[in-house]
Image (cartoon, rainbow, N blue to C red):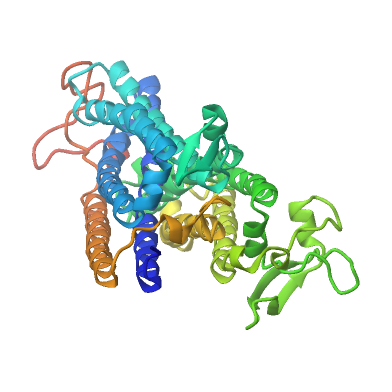
Length: 480
């Protein structure tokens, strides 16, 4: 028996909320773990105490974000069983195995080393602690890989057959290494690094803007801006590769993303214009209005002047994804990527002109305010990209094999509403609590007085910090 249409709508909104909230936290966990390793490696190689202080400070922010990611991740696992019971049962032979691999080879692996990373300062050697931090970064990346393997399989299911209401794996290698994962995983991994660099830039810019510990935060600000310029440019390239993958394997999704309805125009020529903005007509057969760039769609997708890109009208009406949400979420993501690259290049130009040194950086108040405000952009871009990906797969939960309504639990409207309200309250509480704790850590600032952790014991390190309320701090941590 098919579930009630209203119940389906509520449940889909519920899972959209849950997945959209959860996707906010893992990217920062992945990227910040890599950055923490780079900070600690710099301390290990140079013995410069400033890298140690930065590592300990950003580790606190990492812990807060990691906890939120775990909480919302467990909630999403619950939601699969509650809202998508038939899909969970049917896809269990593959989907459940992959999530099990993620738990064993990534989550449990990460949990062990994250304990060493957090509580091992001064109790294990510096080399062993660096090894623990490296493994936290590696396990976080592995976790993302397994999740993208599972999700990419839903986008391009290979190596399975759907028989008697169950997905049976016929070729594990083909299922794991499905066509979409090779483009989607690098794109998501680089998105995590990009988001984390924006986060570090925003935090460092805030301290410089407030003239707090400028000498400590100015160096990671400069380095992160340079890295951000490289990563943002690379992300544009990987996004283009992912678009080509979607064109090949999910042409209906690509057509929805681009607002492409007709493959050919009235004269029989390939319709190759790229719609910058537009809006579908009431009949759903084309755009009522749009601003176009001739030949741009062919150049982007086929790398030719007049290459044909399949339009939505060539697909059965009941197999076409929605247009408005993927169309505009895709453009929001692209616009944000360009904006982040522009800010990073701006920072590179200021560094080249020596305007981001400790003496002059606090005077670049407009630039610093832009950097602080920019922290929200990659989060919006990640959600927009996730919406583009998931809504573009509609009406399928497993592309071309199982429709969404066939994979949903048969809940009553009241029960679906109950779960929606409960999950919404929990997700909002997690977001509010995370923001509050992150801001609290930033307000408190880095610990500049505790002893520097040595090899297996707490030592003062090479720089003996004076104690007492009237002690004079080293020059490099004195506010400008």
